[in-house]
Length: 331
Image 1 (tube, helix red, strand yellow):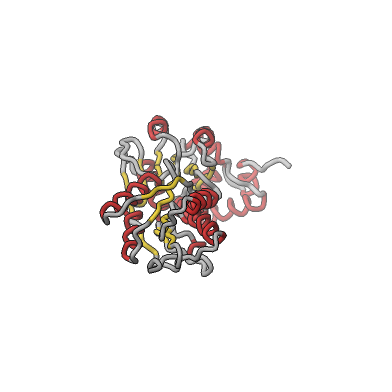
Image 2 (spheres, rainbow, N blue to C red):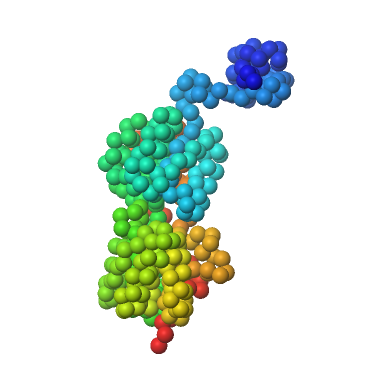
């Protein structure tokens, strides 16, 4: 079927093409009678404004691109909710794509966003080098979310991951733990600061840090935990890089016939909704996920609508959430 045009709406409503266009762009400038006639005609015909044509005229799509590093992690979905909510409130829409935890795939997703002429870009958990992202910032405002930078070309929003790791270690030490292992996630966004915070906190308590390589995934946490148990020197506590990895570690501990927290205390990071489920009840470090998304949108729109040109970097404090997976070690 042929799609109805703005001329069809004008003819049905008995008004000019320019008046229909004004109703679609700035309805508050049109009288109630004319506005209702145009909207009624549009509804009857099934007409929708051509967003592409409108963007060419206004040089704005009113779309914010969002590139997530991993669609399978609920953390990113929660942050995306905050982005979408804030964007809609300001008259924008969010367009999501995934980098699939691979810099090359992330680059393809970004190129697609640029081709679609998004007005701004939010990169959540990006794995690309900052220098490459900075080269794209000449074309549009870019905010890194969940990754710290002091770039003069990019905005950033994140949680103080070093402080979060310190809270995890301090909590475990307060319970009497000394043999605390950290499963780290390499160079993934946020992981280096969590590792650094853990190491500094351990040394501050005159304890020896012990690191085992894992990943921000359930399988990564499970594999790292198997390596820890197979090593023979079993710790009394484990600090995982995020809640997903903690779940994988939890499965491995259970499969080995050990008890949480009697044999091994476990701390995650993120405070996902599943961490609070009664059967999991994971002690973790909380991040205000929806608020992170809202803050990122605010930074993008400060550049688009207010003309800000100097980079801003927002760091939000994390929160220790104590549940059932931590307790004093066996005497």
